[in-house]
Length: 131
Image 1 (cartoon, rainbow, N blue to C red):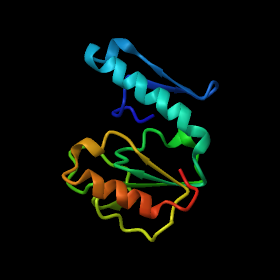
Image 2 (tube, rainbow, N blue to C red):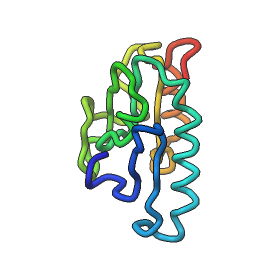
Image 3 (cartoon, rainbow, N blue to C red):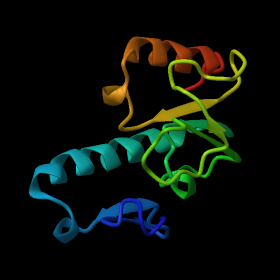
């Protein structure tokens, strides 16, 4: 994991699970963080070879999912550090229909002006039968 991103989360590569250091996270965020990481662990088996990470930031989940291709896209005006191959809005993804086996999007939807449009775009770029 990148030192500046999710300093309170560590990937235990031996167990292929996330560990959370509760001392480094606000009490109000503990439950939501643990729920997010639990959900990612449940989703991991469904990750395909070509994964699009919408709102990727510094790609904190890249190693965890282990896709052959982990393509990141983020908003160009982000205040965060980015490790994105593409800068664009989640509401207008610059990819062909059915281009990805998996679409990952965490902690982004609540920040969008048109979340339904972003979800529609993610569905559009997902291959039939993808996750």
